[in-house]
Amino acid sequence: MKYISSLAKSLPAGVFALLAAAGCISLEEDLRSQPTADKFFSKESDYKSFIASAYPSLVTLYGSDVPYCAGGAAEDVFVPVVRWKGFEQANINSVGNPDELTGMLWNNHYSSIGTCNTMLQIIANTATADLDIDAVIGEAKFLRALCYFNLTRWFKQVPLITEANQADAATETDSSVADIYQLIVSDLKDAENKLPETQNDKVRPTSWAAKALLSKVYLTMAGYPLNQTSYYELARDKAEEVIKSEVFDLEPVYFDLWLWDNRMTNKEFIFTFYASAENGSQTYVNCAVRPWEGGEKGWGDWSSDKNFLADFLKAVNAVSDDVALLNKRVKGTFYLTLIDGTPWYETSDNQPFVGKLRDAGPRSNGYAGPWAHGNGNADGFFNIIRFADVLLIYAEAANQFEGTPSIAAYKAINRVRSRAGLGDLSGLTQTAFDKAVLDERNWELAFENNRWFDICRRQLLQSVMNSYYPERRIDDHNYWMPKPYEQLSIMTGTVQNDGY
Image (tube, rainbow, N blue to C red; front, side, top):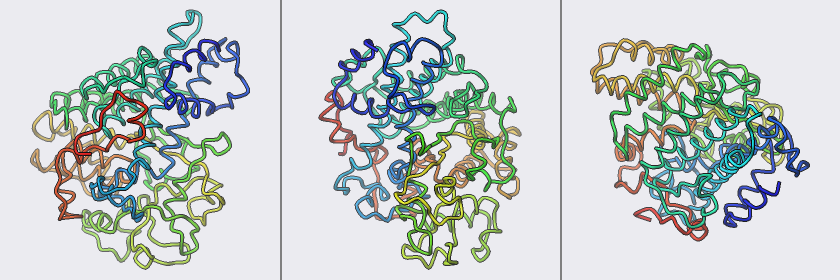
């Protein structure tokens, strides 16, 4: 434990405080009662216990309002909280304290990164030849890659802190987006080689999760701000590996994906965060998305947008009288009638509610409610990447690289549409097919922290604002969040993004 203690002392105060807060909780056990080196690092399970402490800060993040409301400029999210309205309007300079959201995006990712770096540094400085810990190395690199992937998509240039320079985290300068992606790709390639194909513990990533995430990373690199279109080929090929493996499949019923009882057994989730109130990783977003009225007993912090629902239904040529029957995705995506029978359009906010995040198990009183847990905190699960996403990555990347939609690209998108109860696409131009895929991603992946990033990598923000807030004028700075002002005084090497 002396090694860890000396490493901790070398970290800046703000970074170490976050690391300590996240690092004391394991998904499997409480590590606070095991402070000695012999218990931590005498066998393989000790390494697994330590790397598990990289998860709680991320589970807490996805189980909060933060990533959903921060990406509120995407069409799927409506933010009734007045002080956060600027996030929905892509006008963050109008927000009095953007750190309220951006601080958690920054801090929680760097907290997890700090744990991953510590794990990798411990391994590098310890004799581990007799231990089988490749999977731990792969897990640390997978999580670190995921964190940097999110950080650079939220904040553009950020300090690239690794096991090599963690002691200098407070003064490390911003790295270029290209250098950040270089580390992400390197980490994920290492992860896909070191992680096993299956894990007994569903919490932990597999080599397939690394491949799936890498396909998404390549797709993003092909877009803004790197615009390296050659990566479409790599995104296509990596997604194809996952598809051809036949390890994953679409769940037959879309609604069933979002039920607590199915969270560990469905065939579609490739990597998912699981919250557990009993293990100290309780979350509240399942309460936050429920209405406070109509017998629901939720908080109503944020919801969907009625214009998004209208577009969702228009895409299937539907009329809104019998919404639950119109499209097989509607019920899984939205929650439209309250417990007491009140339709969404008669509620105080006059907005449809989110269905995907309702079910947090017994503590939430199941999907149907009303909310059962007094303080709002409960369990939950938050999918990071699933098979439908990979199919749509393949369809988009193949079409963009090949210059025309192939039979395989049609097959990929039509699998997703078929599950949703929609007809097959055919006979489209490259441009029309590309729009169809982006639209399909919008409908299929709503409320899963995807649409904002799709808007950014394809530079669609002005067209989105034209529909929702036509008076808004967008420039490049609107594609990035301001870095948290509090963190600028702690990590002094980083500088604020242009326009803030």
